Every structure is written in C-alpha cells, then in structure tokens.
Image 1 (cartoon, one colour):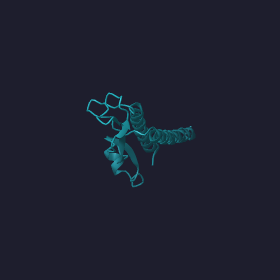
Image 2 (image 1 turned 90 degrees about the vertical axis):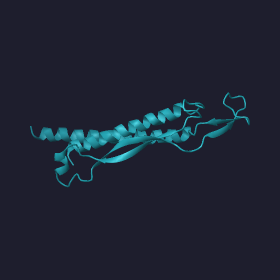
Image 3 (image 1 turned 135 degrees about the vertical axis):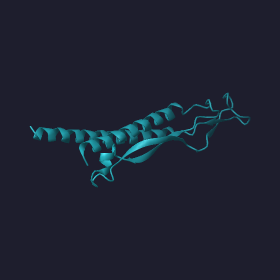
Image 4 (image 1 turned 180 degrees about the vertical axis):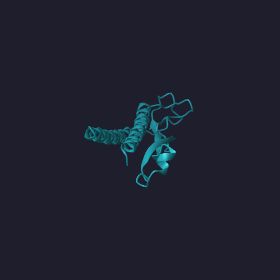
Length: 145
C-alpha cells in the first residue's frame, strides 16, 4: 500500500467519525425535544457506514494485487432508530396525553456519551495513522537528499 492510499483511508475514517460525532451531538441536544416538525418526539439517529474500495482512477484499479483489499469508509445514510418513545408521567406538560404521559425521545444520554467516546477514539486512531504515513513519507524524501 502506498502512502497516499493509507492517507486516503485514514482521512475517510476521520470524515466518517466526524459525521458520527455530529449525529451524536444532535441526539444529545434533542434528548428532551417532545415535538418536532414531523410531529411526535425526536427520534434518535445513527449514521450507517459502508466500506468502499480505495481506488481513485482507472490506473489504480489496474495496478497490482497488493492494494486489492484496501478499503475506506463512507457514511451512506443517517438512519432513525426504530425504538419506541419513552413514556414519562408528567400531567402538567403541554404534550401530555389524557392519562398524563408525555412521549419523550428514545435517546439515552449514557449510551450517547459511550458512543461519543468510541467515535473520539476512532478519530484519534485515524489521525495517528495519518500522521505516521506522513512521517514515513517525509523520512523517505529525506533519504533521497
């Protein structure tokens, strides 16, 4: 695998984790939103990652078998979680039903924080791999001096 392929793969991972962090932030920010434009409480969202071959042009596709299995990642969609809303008893709330229950978003702040930590660690790992590839490229150029 060449330096540029490893950098592209790390960059794709960083981009995907950035989207994941933005989605998690939106979930946390809307953890108490009981009414949306679509009606009903906010629904938790999750990004869907898909592996893609790391090939940019026809020449790279025809190049040797060494990079045949090198894959990056992209976010193909942001999926709404299908779990039902939590019902919380609060008869004084404006959106309370006849029995006094309010439909709250299906967001668990503890789960979101755990996901945020995992996304941060993945981003950091990709940044470290990118910096290592950059360092190796610079050292290779120094050898040629």
